[in-house]
Length: 311
Image 1 (cartoon, rainbow, N blue to C red):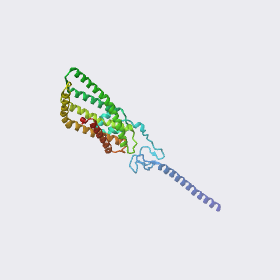
Image 2 (image 1 turned 135 degrees about the vertical axis):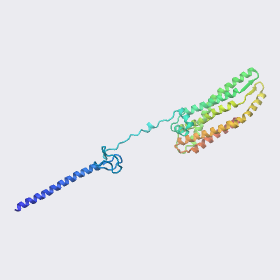
Image 3 (image 1 turned 180 degrees about the vertical axis):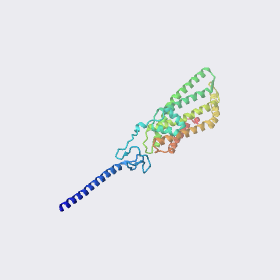
């Protein structure tokens, strides 16, 4: 009897142990399932979700599509390198146009990708324009007197105009480079910007002089009076030239000087923008404007001291 009770007790104890084992097994399976479910996240907001969820409890996003496991490596987007995106935006002639309609964008492009082609083209056109103006002015002058002297004077004038264009190109380029050195030094402010950038900014700013010069030529040349000079009479020639300069005074005051001031301010503004972007804003627009304006006024002063009749 005792043996029978012992066996029954053992069976009961064994059943209890087996039940605990099953319960433990089920519990482990549930834990593994929960653990697996904990690795599921909402593909929309990244919140934890379970496999039976149809919508995310956090953001309400649709979960019908396959889940994204948290253990999955995040997708890495490949950004284009700076070399691929750092591309010059405007060509030389596009820069010329943008300097008029969108000067800030144009000068930023000039400062980021400096070049010498644009400035050299602008300076060359300035010299050509000056040569054309001189030729048109001389057409207003009628030479009279000894035919041989008239022929010699006309040849001399033609030679002077040609030489002035050639010499003017050299002088303007030298002046541009010297001015660029001064701009680089005065607007550096610890930025360490290059001479190429300063020269490019300074050169492209001359577009203001070119455009104002073209406008001035169109307006002023037709207004110039004609003059007759007797080359055989020196005193009469000097008197005629003095009288001619007096007649030109009102044109200078009413048209030439205001246009020159507009060009001066415009060029200084372009220069200020260029120094701002060229120095990564170490130098302000105001300081760049002041430097360009001061150098331009200094140039006018020197020009006036050399030739008082030029102003």
